[in-house]
Length: 139
Image: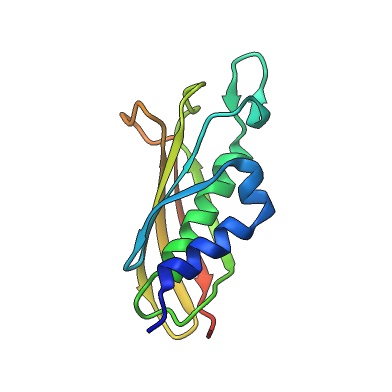
């Protein structure tokens, strides 16, 4: 039996960009994933405010969505992003870890559909939400 969670974890840990962002896969399984990105001054987009750059939030959401697809019971293997829409709701709170959570809610033979949210430690309102489609690739 193939351990999809282990494959997804190895894949994410091998991505240099994910390493540079400090992404940590904290939960995965059955089409759901959670990835945390600790605050780092290296990721700040506005030095005046200390707010994390939107591109770092986007990358964390994209990676989390891919992990959710890879862990879906009906997905046979790898994935790649077809389309990903991000809606930024507010600036992330400086100094706080960003937690992304994604769910692969529908999958066909060729395409997986995912929704995700990025939260900081305040968790009162999302930093960003995402909706996307991803390829479904064989092992």
